[in-house]
Structures are given as C-alpha cells and as structure tokens.
Amino acid sequence: MRQLGNKQTLKSIEAALVEARSQLALTATWRDLHIGYDIGTIKGKRLLLSSADRAALRELVKVHCNIDLLAGGGSSLKQISGSDRTALSQQIPNEKLSGLPVAADMVLLGNPRGVLSLPSGVINLAPGMLVSCHYAQLHGLERIVVVENLSPMYALANYHWPGDTATAVMLFRGSPQHSPAAVSKALEGVREVFCFPDYDPQGLRNSFTENARLSGLIAPSEATVEHLLTMGLNKTIEFEKQADARSWLKNHRHEDALVAPMLSQRIALSQEAMVGCELHIRRIEPTATESKVDYKAE
Image (cartoon, rainbow, N blue to C red; front, side, top):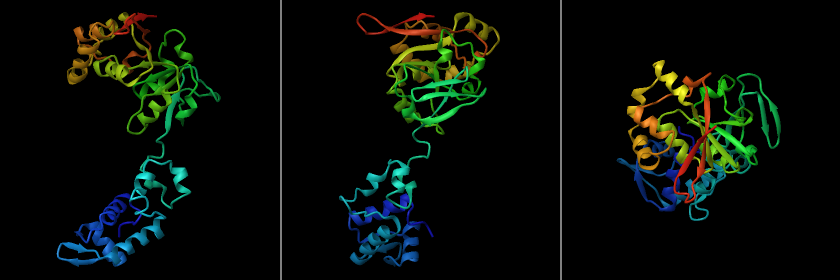
C-alpha cells in the first residue's frame, strides 16, 4: 500500500477535502486508501466520499503526518513545501515533504593553490580536493570565480590562472546534482564575480545572463585559441547545436572582443582543452552611457 505521507497522495487528499468532493476517479492512490483505511465506497470506476469519509481522511493525515490539510484554507502543504528539512523535521514526521533535495543550499568550492579563504576562516585542501558548504559561507567575499564545468574543478591546479585569480575561491556553476539556485544565492553576497566558461556561444551567453555582478571573464588568449584550433580541438558540432545562444550573442554582444572572433571563426573550445594554456582576464567595464560593455585583457 502507498505511504500516507507520500506528497502526491497528500495533494490528492488535500484537493478532495478543500473542494469537498463527493466522488473521485478510482486511481491507484484512492484504491489503496480505500483498501488500507476503509475510506469511501467503490462504485464502478469511481470512489464515493461521504462527509464522514472526508472527516476520517482529515484525521488520518493529522495522526500520521501531523498536518491539518484544512488549516488556513488548505494551504498547509504549500507552507511546508520548500521548507528547510531540518526545521521541518521538528514539526512533522516526514521532513522529505519539503520537496527540497538534501543539498539544496550547498555549493561546491575549490582553489588552485589548495587554500580556501572564506570569511569564516581558512581551509587547507589536498590536491584535487573540493569542499561543499552552505551558500551563506561565501557572503562577504570580495571576489569569486564561477567555473562552468565540474571536471576542471578537480584539476584547478593544472590551469594557468591569470593575474591573482589563483588565490580566489572557485565555485562550481551548478548542475542537477549541485543546485544552481544555491549558487545564485551565494553570489548575492559577493562583490565581484568572474566567470570561467567554455569558450563557445552557450558558455558566453550563460556568463552574461546568469551573473548580475559579472565583473569579467576568464578566457583563452588569442595565442591559446590559435594553438587549440591548430590541434584540431574545435568542437564544430557543438557550435552548430548552439543556435539560440549564437542568436542571442549576435543581438546583444556582437561587437564584444570575445564574441566577435568566436562567431566569425565558429569556435567552440571546452574548458578541459585549456589545461596548461595561457588564459586572460577580460574585464567588463561600463561605458559612459552604460549601454554596453568594453573588454580589457589582462
């Protein structure tokens, strides 16, 4: 039998109670509730619910889940959805009803030199080691480098980081396994954000559109681009796939020093290909009218 604390089951029960339904389609969920708790009367492919059945359902959920589905106009599930799991575990027996993954507020950090300097203290890392922490631990930092792909995070020491960026905290951009929402929350408390993306249309578009505090991009130098193209590492198929990103760049950034040659030469170079190669910082400086940005290589 399905668990009464299953979120989808609770949503079905909530809808029946809030709308005071007298009959429902006999789905697997409602058949299980009928068999397991003697709720309702089966008539063909429908389940009939009396007022007594609805009252019994309400009490069942109260007893098993410590939730009153009719409290506040039936908003109880909305109130707990998205809540912190630890806090929710102090209120109800099934903290998973929050709907949030366990690591919803966690971000993945590293540093090329193995020294992670956070406002709360310094963490020394072994080669190739990353740490996961709550996004709020980054608030108060002067600068962060956002790294697009996960594999370079495990090889940060193998890149030739420009300027003094090797001392910065490096933050993985996020994925289905590492919440991008937590990354956005982390960046809200940082003064300068630099991005290290793939040098392709999608990588540049993501950098421009996902980071309100974008101060610059870390990108391959012209010599590195020429070298990687000569080595046959240009991912032309990926370039062709990124039509939407190319269109956005043409409409918004076609004169930028990074974008123009990439579009004209049809370039798509991965971060992984840039290991051991020369990288530059392309700082973003607002113009006098702030209508576009200029790039200055470092």
